[in-house]
Image (cartoon, rainbow, N blue to C red; front, side):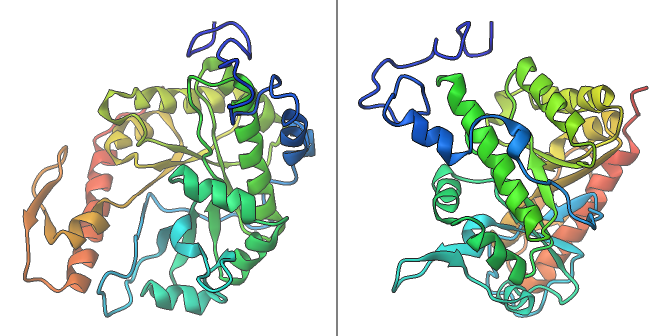
Length: 331
C-alpha cells in the first residue's frame, strides 16, 4: 500500500473530472494534452542531464534574497539566487524572461564579487515554478539564463501532495527532469531534484539514475513539513540510493543545515544551501561565536550591513565545519 492511502494510481482520485485540475486519466479531454506536455511518462526521452564540466560545490552556499542596502560586493565563492529573483515578468509587455543579459549585470544587481559563481535555486512556491514551466518556451528562458552566466541550476521541485493521483506525481517528476535536460542543453550544469515520497519512488529514482551513470549532482529540500517531518529518512534513502547505484552522489541539501551530522555520517559528498545568515542579517542580528549544536544570534543594530553579512556567513560556515568534525561516519 503506497503512502497516502490506496492501492493504485486512482484510489486518491476526487472523481470530479469537470472541476479537477490534476493530471488524471479520468479527465478524458485534458489527459492526452497533459501527456503531450511532457512527451509521455517514460523517462527514455529525457535528454542528457550532465555537461562537459561539472562544478565543484563547497560545503555551504548562502542564499541571497536581494541586494538589501549593501554597498560593497560580497566576497563569496558561491551564492544561490531564487528563481523568482532572476526571472520575472516585464511590466510593459508582461513577458516572462530572465532579468539579466550578462554575468556582470547579474553580479552587479546582487552586489556580488566578480569571481562569485551563481547557483539558480528552483526550489520555491508553486506559482513561481508553474510560471517558469508555462513560459520557458522550448528553451528560450534557459538560453537567457546561460547568457546571464548561471553556473549551475537545481531543477524545479514541482509539488508532490499525498492526496492526489499518482499520475500527478509522475507528471511533475518528468517535468523536473525535462527542465534539468534543458539546463544541460544550454551548458548549465543541472542538479537533479529527487522527487520521492515512498520507497517505491526511491526505487524508481534508483532505476532512472542507474541508466544515467554520469549523474552525480542531486538535490533534496529539508524545509517542507517543519520539525514534524522525518527529514533524516531522506538522508538514509539517499545513502541507500548510493549503495544501490554502486557510486557516490553529491547531495545538495536545501535547508538542511541542522542535519549536517547525519549528512556527514551517511554520505560521501554534500552541500548545504540556505538563507539563514542573510535573514538574520536583514533583521540586524549577529552570529555569536560560542556554541556548537545551537546557533546564538544577538542584536547588532550598529554594524554596517556589508560587514554584518560577511561576518554571519563566515561564522555560519565555521559552525557547519564544527558540526562535521563532531560527526562519526557510519560504516
